[in-house]
Image 1 (cartoon, one colour):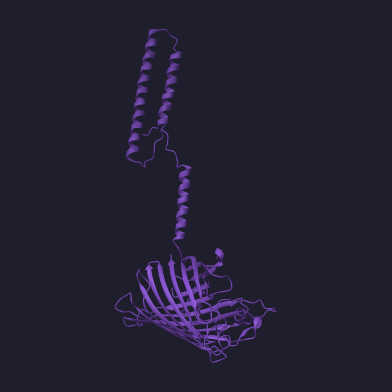
Image 2 (cartoon, one colour; image 1 turned 90 degrees about the vertical axis):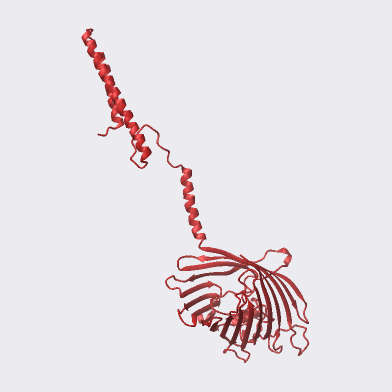
Length: 474
């Protein structure tokens, strides 16, 4: 039988008044009555002592049960209960939850960038020498926006709105602040259930194979890309990629309306590429690109009026000033074969690249370009070295002059050599030494790049350029 402590105490309290009432109602002075009252009082005292013993036994049992079984149902006592968690503790727990959530988001993104300091010295007969120090800074974040979606945002130095091929800032202009603009901003959909699909939109890094013959390394195209990659499990073919491209470069609100294709400027095309392992030592990637430029004349107008200051306008044109147009139209038919030979040392692979480009929409026969590059070594670990050489021959209307390599003597109508040495000084620091040697192919072509004071009928002297770079990546 379970007896609550409250019931026992109540019984004791009721017994005491009963005792007092009996005594107060006894008015007979007889000895017998006094003896009876004494006996009654003694009996009640005995009962009270027994009840006290029961209460003490219950309290002892309760203390023993609490010590041996913490999860047991507690017995109500007059002892004070432990205070609840304080408000400060609850606030700390909430802060920990928020911190964990922020840490989870931060782990999905990666901050990266680089700083390049360059010495640039240029020499050519009939022109003044130049010695410049150039600075390039790039900083951005990229990562997973969701299970199937990634993206990023990068900023870079460089002039805003007039030079798509350059991110350099000359250390000059009396310590003034430098312009920083959006270099890349993109979203890519790559579903986990179909990894072979990669859909990209925005201003993004190249999603197809190319060299500086067609696009400068500092240029990031804008528009859309759809890439589908298949990787066979057997055979020499290791990967097959098909890439669709829609590059948007000039939007016009034409009077009276009209279709998108009639007013706006864009390039559409695609590339097919395959990667092969030819034995244990040789691997090659062969790519074929077709890229058709629609309504490209606004590029000529922008370059002629110096709205676009990326490269020299060396393509053939008609008209002057704001009425300048290209003589030719442009369709890049471009084939690249990139080969790597693994030698006995992992640090010294041999690479050889060959590229041939033709523009079948040119109005003249100046419509071909060739690019070769070879190198020995790699740049992956501390103390890696790489030596290399490249050669380019670009005819006048082979490519658009606005977007290809900005370090060439001129964008088109040129013969260009380059030799380079790269040294990975530390894991995140690289030193590069580059020598450029190039000249104009035919000084008699329209818009040919030659010094203003060059004597008549003299060929363009070689432009000699020396560059020394230190690049820190993080």
